[in-house]
Image 1 (cartoon, rainbow over the protein chains, first blue to last red):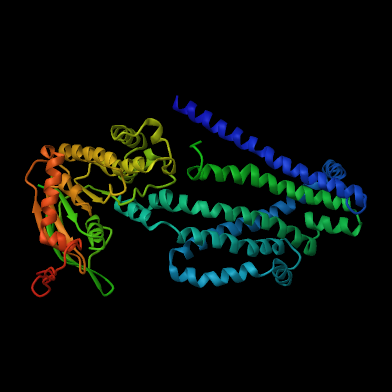
Image 2: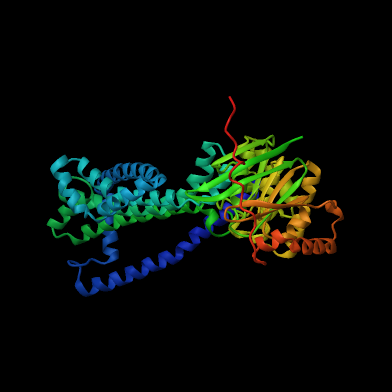
Length: 267
Length: 262
C-alpha cells in the first residue's frame, strides 16, 4: 500500500515536471518565431530560418556526418567536465573545512574565474599541441573554479546548530557524511555543476574550432569557411539540443529528487 | 542509582570567564531547573553536560548513559522527514531501519503527530509540530538524562501545557533525570523538583530552591503563588535586574581542585 502511494506520488511528480515543460516549450517556440522573422528579412545566406536549419540538421544525421563529431565533442566535454567536477568538489569541500584555506583560495578562485578561457586555450595549445588534451584541459580549468567555489560555499555554510545536534546524538562519521554534510553540500554543488556543464560545452566547441581537426568545433570551422550558414546553425542547434537534454532530462530531475526537502510536498 | 556530579566547573572563552565554580548534583528521576537571565552561562553549562564543550576546568562524574538533547530551536535536519528526524539517534545507535521507523512512528503518534505529518519535511510543519518532533527525537532514545535548552520558550501557552504533560509522563515512566534551562520561572516551578538560580558575569549558581510538592499535585494556583514567592527572593530579584544590589562573587581562592592525585 505504501509502495503504491509512493509510486503514485513519484508518477504525479514526473508528470507534473513534464507538464511544467510546456512553458519552456512556448518560450523556445517564441524564439523560433523571431528567428524565422529575421530569416525572412535577411534571406537564407545570412540567416537560414529554423525550418531550414532543422532540415539541414536532419540531413547531417542521415548522412552519418553529425553523430561521430558530436560523440567526439561529447567525449572531450565529459572528460574535462568529469575531472573538473571530481577535483573541484573534493578540493572545494576540503578548502571549506578550514577558514584559512577558504580565505587563501577565495582570491585564487576569483582570479581563475576572471581568466578568459581563450587565454587558457592559447597556453594549452603551447603545452599540449593539437590533440584531445587541449580541449579537455581547457574545459577542466574553465569549470574547476565554478565547482570549487560552489563546494567551498557549501562546506562553509553548514549550520553550526545542526553540527551540534549531530554531535549530541553521537552520529558516527559515515552518518555525518550521509546525513549531514552531503545533503547540505548537494544543494550548493548541483547549481554549480549545471553552470559548469553549460560552460564546458561552450569551451569545448571553442577549443575545437581553433585547435583540432575533428569534433563539432572543427566542423563549424569547415562550414564557416564554405560560407554554409545552414550547416553552421545546424551544428549550433545540435549542441544546444544536447545541452538542454542533459540539463532538463538528467540534471534537473536529479536536482529535484535530491532537493525535495526544499520545496513542495514529498514526492 | 544513576547520578551526575559536577564540582568546581570553570569555563572561559578567551579571557572572559563565563562559568565560575559551578557545582551541583542530579539524580535519576529528578528534574533540575537552571534559571537565570540571558547570558548567565546556562547554555554553556548545558553544552558541557551534553559533551559538546570541554570546560576549562571541572570535576565531572556521570553514570547516565543515554543522553537526549532538546535544543532551544527545533534544529531538525531540513532534508529529513519528521519520521527520519525522530529516528536520527536510533540510526546513530545502529538500530535497523524497519525497527527504528516503527519506534519513531509509535512515539510520534503518541506525541500528537499525525501519520501524514511524519512524512513531511520540517519546512512543511508548523513551529509547534517541529518542537514535538524535536522532543520526540530525544525521547525515542529512552534517555537516562534529558537535557532541555529552553525548548518551549517560543510556543503558545496551550502547546506548552501539552508538551509539559508529555514530558512529565516520560519522566514518571522511565525515571529519566531532567536538566532543564529556562528563563521562565513559572515553567521551572511547574516542572522542577529543584530550581537553581544563576547569575551572569561570571556565570555562577547563587541560590537553590527545593519544591516539595509532587508534580501531579501542582495546581495552577499553587504554581502562580510559588512563582510569586520565589520572585521575592533577593537573589532572583537582583539576578533578573528587578532590584539593585550585588551578589557575592565566586570564591576563587579555595575552590579550585588540585588536579589528579597520583
